[in-house]
Length: 357
Image 1 (cartoon, rainbow, N blue to C red):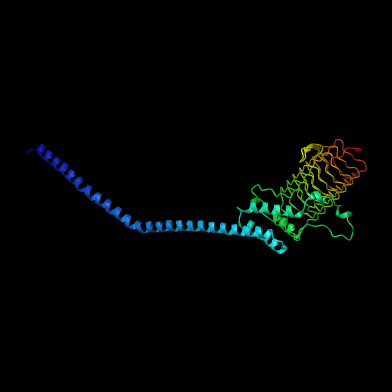
Image 2 (cartoon, rainbow, N blue to C red):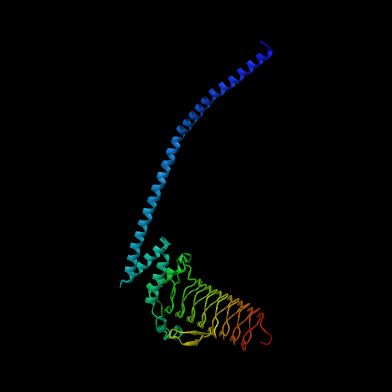
């Protein structure tokens, strides 16, 4: 056999060997893969079992939490109903207990907070009396010296104090309605903050009330009577005071920035009769250091008022009456002063006042 024949035989043998090796390697590779898969499954079993246990535990905890919430809601409902029953008691102590129970519910349940706010406001409004009747009586300064000063009932004060101590961020748009309420001499026994932003005190009788430092931002005080009230450091920014009376009120250091004290417009009363809106009366009021920037005060009556160091920049004071007012060091720059009455006003150090005003 020649060399070519030997080479052909060798080549055929190499081909047959490669084919044989390929056929034998495939089963061995498949065997190794199956072994590795079984090993992986065996190794993973404890982890899968732990994961299943964790999932089961999570489901149990979720169910337990759900049942706990249902139980808590049921308990709060029972507490709420009991507190409402207490509010109707003839005993003052029981009524106070109902008020403080509602206060606790407000603290414990954000969901029930707005409802409690409405209930407490309605309680105070109902039991305080109507300002329609109280305004027929003279102010404290004109009452007999031996007469006791007027003040709301203890339970009414407790209800309003609870509202004043609440968290306004939980109100969910609920407005505290204390309109047309007799709140003469309202005061609080402690020094806790008074948070009543956006409260409705329209047409309320707040004569001689003590509201020092209160947060009354954007409150409605339309036609409210605040004569002789103590309102020092009060925040009345953006409040509506159209037609309000604040004769002899102490507003030292208060903020009335962008407050609306406009008058001269018209409105419809409950009977549909159109009438002119009364102007705000601030005669003899103390407004030292008050922030009145950009306040709407056209036609406001400030006769004999004290505005020492007050900031009235940008305020609308057109046709306001400032006769005999103390305007020492007040700032009127940028204010609208057309038609202002200045006769007898003390203007020492006042800025922005027209010459020979």
